[in-house]
Image (tube, rainbow, N blue to C red):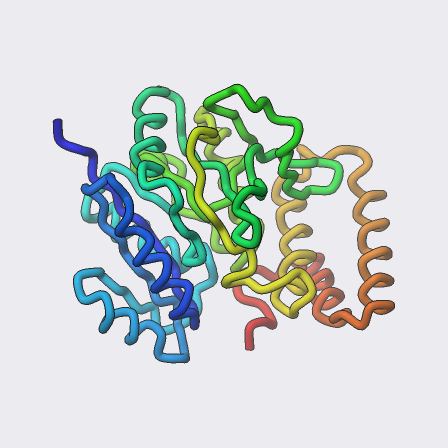
Length: 298
């Protein structure tokens, strides 16, 4: 029987090391009807050209400017839709594959469950591959944030239903993108996974974790840590933007939680010497409704 064809969309931004390691790791997959597509998202360090030279059989598309996570991914998703792939696998470039049957397992899930709109493997931490970074995803509407309920989820279930899944290794039927639409580009980075999870579920689909397989993910490989300028700006801005879009779902405690978080975050950053101004600017830009690419990266 012919295997369904799968396009894997991998975003590169000034990161030859992780992207090349991810592409090499893909060679270990048993599933053969798979086509990686690299989107070089406006890199300025020559990494896109270097990847094209090292992997001549892989399609490397260049955007010529940084479109953000969703914008870059949407270039690849559109290409996969135009070429009529059956499934689209969104992959972070800092993902490695320890299970050579991970893709086959994910496809089996989507084909076996009629209302499955997306599936992810368990995501393990790159610094400790025995530790689980993601198993079950929920949205806390008191704080408008993602929650990884890794300890609470059932360990004996092959499938766990989620409210959202991170987009570091998420497999979708191509038909979901045709029906639901592309990833939201308002955020530039962070929060597009939460919004898309809400939208997919609003269309009647379910989002699963396949617990019998896993990948390894370096959480900060592309985006950096939670105290750099990128995260400090986009996290508060996009939290506000997301909250405004889905204000009818927010818990009554949301304003109290938001104010408490802002005060504690600014205080902590000031005491520890972490960036405060990007955080405050991001917060203000969220209140003003500024979306898309913001003040960072310069």
